[in-house]
Structure formats: C-alpha cells, structure tokens
Image (cartoon, rainbow, N blue to C red; front, side, top):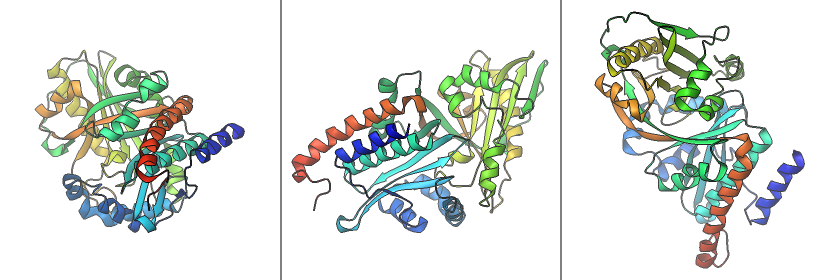
Length: 371
C-alpha cells in the first residue's frame, strides 16, 4: 500500500505541482481572514455566524492541537503573488471525513493540485470515505465533485440533493398521537435497524459513509478522541415505527460549533419513508424533531448558541417541513466517495487539472504561478 501511495505522490510531482502544500501553515485567524478576503462567506451565512466567530475560532484552535486527527487545513500560500487557497477536513465518524471550504484567491490549477494532494493524503490515512457539501449553483464544485459518479460509478460514490431547513422546536404545534405509532431511540446496544432504513431512504453509500453499519452508532469512540482536546462529537438517533415497521428517522449530530460554516457538524438528517401519507408524515416529523431537540442545549453560548435545529431532508419530502413552518435555508448536494473509488477519483481530478494547466501554460508561458 505504501508503494502505491508513493506512486501517486510521484505522479503529483510529475504534474509540476509545487511541493509546498502543507497542513495548517497559517494560523486560524489568518485562515478566517482569507475566507473574508475571497468572499467565501456570502451575506446570509456571514450574518448568521458572525456573532459566534470567537466561539468558532476557539473550537478550531482546540482541534488544531490534535494536528491531523480531528481537523486540518491543506493550503498553498504564495505571498509574492498574493495567492492563497485552502481546503479543510474534519473527522465526522471513526474513519470518515468531511472535506469543505475549498477556496482560492485565483489560479485554479493550484486549487486542483491541492485537491490532488489531499486525495493522496486520504489514501495514506486510510479514510473509509470523504464527503463534501456544495450548492448546486456552484459550477466549479459541480464539475469537480458533482460529476464523481460518472467516473467512479455508483458502487463507490454518490451525489444526492437535499433541502436544508432551520426550525425552532417551540414553533412546532402539538400533534395528536397516532395509533400503532412509536418512537424509539437507537443506541449502541439496540440500533433498531437504522442502517437498513438509511440504506432504503438515502442509499447504501450514505449509510456506509455515515458509519451507520458500525456497532458504535453513538460515536462514543470518536467522542473519546475529541474529548482529549476539550471538544465533543456525538450522534443521537431516533426512529419512528408504524405497526412495527420503520417509517422515519432523525439523526442528530453534535459537534464543535462552527466546524463547518454551514453548521453541518450540528445538523439533523431527517429520513422519511416515501410511501407514508403526508398527514402522518407531518405528525411523525413533529415527534422526531421534538426528540432531536433534546440533543441541543439551545442558546448555550459555550456550546450551541442557536435557538433552532438545522435539518437536511430529501427534496421530495421538503414540503412537509414547509407546512410545519420551517424556513428553507437553501439546497445542497452531498457528494461522497468511498475509499475503493479514490484511485478513479484521483484520475477524475487529474484530468480536470491537466485541462486547466494547458490553459495556464498558454496564458503564463508554462509557469505554474504567474509573476
């Protein structure tokens, strides 16, 4: 395996990629300043998290102490031409990572080279999967990440679209109970079939990448790692049953606030059986959201300063949350690649990289970075 990784590292060198890509080469404040410089934070998102930036910065600083075990940022930084780019990774489950915040102040060839370097890093670390979230309107992300299934295939990759909502638990009206309906919390000792239900609703790749096939569905092992650095990473799951058959579930993630600027580290994934009638689905969702709200200490500045839940849901079911008064934030695509597809994904990004390099060579006479 090590020889295989070295071959890819040599491949990157052959592509004239500068070898000064390093992890965490700038401080967290400087990285956040870079995000502002390249307008990474659009107004709506910035307004939402700006009041909590001191908390977010503290969480990132704490995670940095773990080096590459929890959260790390791969960067290129060329002060001479005032060019900087970054991509950040954080551990979501035991061996599954989220890639995020791909930014650049220019020079797309450098960005793609950085992505190639990150992929080799993922191979070296033995990541089980890497996922990222991006807006469908982001043409660059759609080209690099959204087309992954075309190259890797659906056996080891997936791209799915979801709507992202926020809702305050207090705004949910009380619903009458349904006969033969029950809510059960899934714990390590009694997982209650969440893996199979997640496969049915969101597919096998999602269920595997979220590590729902593991005995530790509560992420206690991951939390133990986070706890070493004064942080926490947990998962709470509830399932809904009608006549003893699973019809819904909510997966509530808890992590260091602001690890992701869209707050995916603290999202809830709401899964609904498509065969469920809307009236029953709405009652079920209300009960599930009420249960999930127990996982979030609303308004606690040191932990979770919001007063709402952020929820992903399949587009086909998003009208149910709208009818409940939830506010749609925007739509996102979730792109996932399993370890078995990393080699093909490397080739996918390499192809895009070489195409961009040809343009760069013509424009800047073969130089990776222009003067």
